[in-house]
Amino acid sequence: MLSMPHELRIRIPTWLSDSISTFDTDYPSIQSRMAFTISLAKQNIEHGSGGPFGAAIFDMDTHQLIAVGVNVVVNSCCSMAHAEMVAISMAQQRLKVFDLASTPQRFELVTSCEPCAMCFGAIPWSGIKHLVCAARDEDARAIGFDEGPKMSDWRQALKQRGISVETDICRQQAIDVLQQYAVNGGAIYNAGDAKREDQR
Amino acid sequence: MLSMPHELRIRIPTWLSDSISTFDTDYPSIQSRMAFTISLAKQNIEHGSGGPFGAAIFDMDTHQLIAVGVNVVVNSCCSMAHAEMVAISMAQQRLKVFDLASTPQRFELVTSCEPCAMCFGAIPWSGIKHLVCAARDEDARAIGFDEGPKMSDWRQALKQRGISVETDICRQQAIDVLQQYAVNGGAIYNAGDAKREDQR
Image (cartoon, rainbow over all chains, first blue to last red; front, side, top):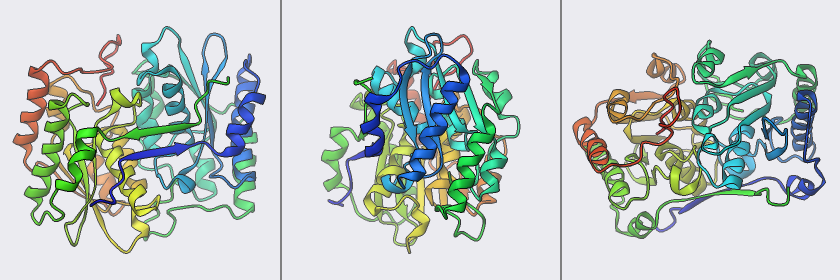
C-alpha cells in the first residue's frame, strides 16, 4: 500500500510548453480559432506526443486564448487526458476556479473533433458556454477511434443546459490530421478488446 | 500568455494520504469494500476536503485495494476531480498504464454513488471490468446534486462493452452520508445557474 500514489500530474508536452510564448493572444474569427486548435492536433502527432486531437479555451467576447490542450493519454498514463479535458483543466487552473461560469467572462471550448462520451459529460461541469467542433464522431470512427456510449441527441442535451454548439467548422482540415495519423500508423489505443473499446 | 499553466496536479487530501498506511490490504466481501468506500466519502466531508463522494479500485480476484479517490473538485479547482475519476487516475498512475485492462489483473470500481454523465463516459476508457455503486442518482439529486445528461440505459451501455454493473450495495449507508453533508450545509456547487447545473 505504501506505493499508492497521492497525486495525479498531467503535463502538456514540452513542444507545447515551449510554444506558448509564440502564440497570438487574440483569434478574431472562428476559423482562426479552429485553425489554431487543429494545428495543435497536427503538431501533437508530428511530435509523437499523443493522439490526433487538440482543444483550446477562448474568451467568447475578446477571443483571447486562455488555455490549450492536446491528447496526452498514453504519455500521462491517464485515460482521462483527452484534449478537451486537458484544455478545460488548464483554464480552470489558470483562473483558479472549478467552474469557468463563476467568473465574469464567458468561455468557449474549441475542439478538433466532437467530444467523446466522457468529454461530453464533462462539459456541463466545466462552466463553458459554447462548444465548437471540427471533425465529426464518424470521422474519428473512420480511423478506428471510438466515441464511447454517447447519447444521439448530445447537442440538444447541451443546449438544454445553456451551452450552444457549433459543428463542422474547418471539418476537412481536421479530417486531414486524423487521416495523417492513421497513415503514419499512429496508435489506435484500447483496440485490443473483444468488444471494440478504442479510445480517444 | 506567460501565465498559462503547463500542468494539472490533483492531490488526494492530506488526511487520506496520511491514512493509507493504516488501511487493510484485502477486503474479501463486497460489503466490506463498499463500507470502506463510503467511509472515504464520510471522512471527506468531516475533514471539509470535498463533496460527499468516495471511490476505490480493487483487484477483482484478490480483492486487494489498489487505489482510492474522493471528490476534490473545489480544493483542486478542477471540475473533473470527481471521486471516481481520482480513483481511476490513481490506479493508472500506480500501475503505470492508461488502460487497466492492459494488465493481467481485472479491476473493479467501487463508488459510493452512481456515476454522473462524465464518470459514466470515463469508465469504458479506464479498463475496469466491474462497477459497484451504493447510492442511486436520485439519492444525489435529493440533496441538490445533478448527475448531468446521462442516458437512461447507462447500465446496459456498460454491459454491452463488457463491464458488469452492481447497484444498491449498502445504499442506505451512502444515503446517510449524503444527508449528513446536506444537513451540515455542504456546498452544492454549480447551483447558481438559471438552469440547474449542480455538479457532483
